[in-house]
Image (cartoon, rainbow, N blue to C red; front, side, top):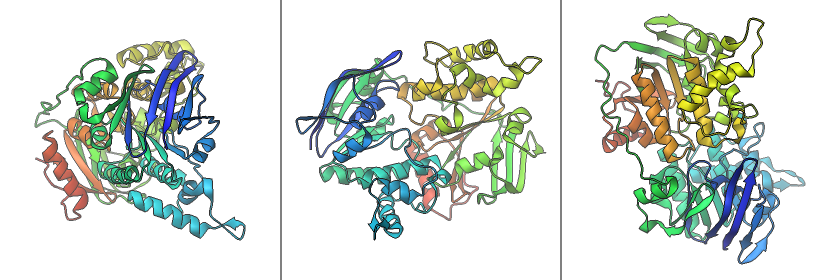
Length: 508
């Protein structure tokens, strides 16, 4: 089945997302769709899957024009997708979400035993042991992503579109997904793969189309003829800037800012001991379900600490709420789920940046004026180079990269001393990713203590001074980072797969 897009144009208020874009998808190929945030990739995928109608242009299937008025129309034509924005029903179980489009029935009723067995089959193909009875709202972002992938696979589509499918999953889970995608390709499925991780694109894709500012910068070029430098240049219009963080060495007498001592939580963490120095970047790495985000959330009282001590600047503390974490202990948490937790999508940029200091900005009567928000937000928006015509722009209308910058800006406004950043560059283009990396290092150099949770191993090895590997809600290994990928990746992988690894591995 051959799918083609001819001359697709799509405009939204204030922006032309696509300008006469064409794309040919062939069976038995994995086709990379590349470009910066805001280049038009997600819009093109939404046209192919019936979420959006093009203002002009057409979609052809086997040479014949088709009309796609909804995602169900697309599924009926053998087209399925995993979108960046999750499309799951939070109060339904994992199994119900996966089989929802075609519920198995017995005697006229839903056959739940068959539904769970069917869902289990597709989850096992990806290699993740999620309980199919669990309500989706209780899953981590990474687990939700894998449920989305299983849901798309269950449609047995002939055209499969994946928009940042590995954004929140680790390298090991991504490898399992790639093996599955190769199997699908070999069975004749046409696959579109969108990722900002260039190493993935070169590893798995056969051809590449590049969008820049809503227009075609390269069309269906063989990956075998593409270099990293050429691809980056096509995406951003200039050569990639290399950044080296290897020379960040903290003095031996740098004080410990945050100490977790023999910590256990109601979520299942066991005997966690972690030292984080002032101005240090500590990275938490592990597979989906390792307990990294949950540990961070326990620090800001999203879960109960049942045992152990938290010390800040050498003094034991008891944090009573998220507000207490921010106002009294100056701890910020940048959520991996920026759309649901990190931002108020229906509010303007100025309000999202100023939200952490609303009390400080309110007047004597407790009223908050837009002018005060704007005055506080404007210099931060400029510093972080948030691309917008106005601070009145709704955050929901921004690209993923600019949304992430707004998330960072609100914690800079709060002037926190400790910042926990969960998946700092998930779904973000290569230029913005480099900028955020530089900003994290700049903040650490200025004395901010940072904990980075990332499923992107190259990112972890590039950024962190000290890497902590987690497994089964415990620490499986701790390593001083020498920033040599071959060395660090082998140690990290060994820690994940070797249950005998000592938690006190290389700390010197």
